[in-house]
Image 1: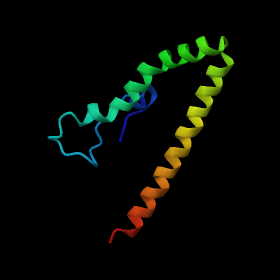
Image 2 (image 1 turned 45 degrees about the vertical axis):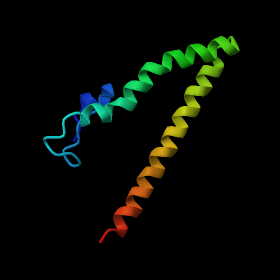
Image 3 (image 1 turned 90 degrees about the horizontal axis):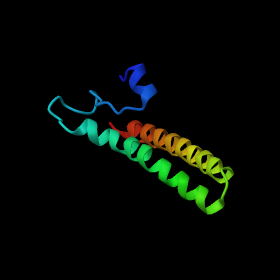
Image 4 (image 1 turned 60 degrees about the vertical axis):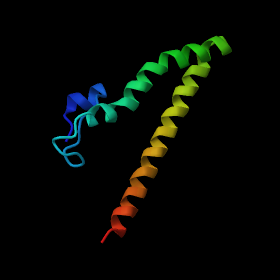
Length: 88
């Protein structure tokens, strides 16, 4: 289980439940999406701001991406539970 600090800082951790001890590099692969988003977010925000000449569109973009992420999470949980329930 991830520690509170790793959750608060958004760092990816190797899950012991899904990866053996010799799975080197898995931690980096799990943290890649978060690191990519952290790197591209300022560039995307600056691009939106330069096109619209205001920060309101940036705020709405962040809100919509957050809502989309939450929906994707709940869909993934639901699909995972259905798949797990069918496994004998």
